[in-house]
Amino acid sequence: MEISTRDFGIVSVEEDALYDFPEGLYGFEEDTRFAVFHKSFDDIDFLYLQSVLNVIPCFLVFEPEDFLPGYAPILSKEDLASCGAEGPEDLIFLVIANVPGAVEEMSINIKSPVVLNPKTKIGRQVILQNSDYKVRYQPFLNKENGGI
Amino acid sequence: MLVISRKPGESLIISDNIKITLLSIGGDKAVIGIDAPPAVKIVREELLETIEANREAIDQKDSQSYTHIASLLKSKKTAKTAKQD
Picture (cartoon, rainbow over the protein chains, first blue to last red):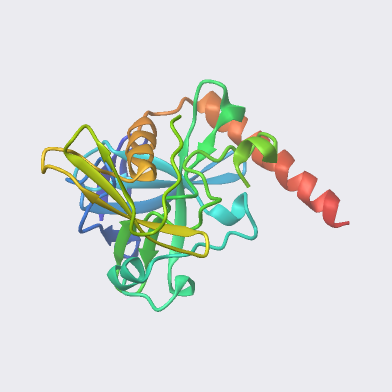
């Protein structure tokens, strides 16, 4: 399927890369279908979460393990049920990045990851129970500043 | 910040019409009940922060930013490998 993207014009994505977000994302409740695709930049694969219905929103996302190998999300029973999962191992987690002018101050939202269920093709943004995970974790700065 | 101690079952009142009751404490969690008029908006802080972070995250980044992130990621990976050795 071909989708209009914010950064790359028309991009062709596999049907497999499309997810329904029944509730949208926080602040973007109208956008109920997203595509996940990647673009390579200087040998690094960057992942994008692009609304299929609108060119904006589009988010730069990362796999949390890229920064936090021990990422251990705890979901409430309600959130697990709404994702159609028994446990976090059934789900794919992506974290949304915020890139300010000073790039090393980039933050990722490890408290509220985007959660994809590859079986049901449903996606949601959930707020985790982990009290030490921050909405703005800065992976390139000292750990003291990042919250973990 | 005003700090008030409450035992489970005890309440405090804010501006005559909002009542906050400490219902129970268990482990590292306190369960709080709030009685307030419907017009009073109540959200968890991290939800508000997430909405703000999402709204800020939709800006398009220039290619320089990507080059910079790529180099930071590479040096982070190198540091990690070095540590494991």
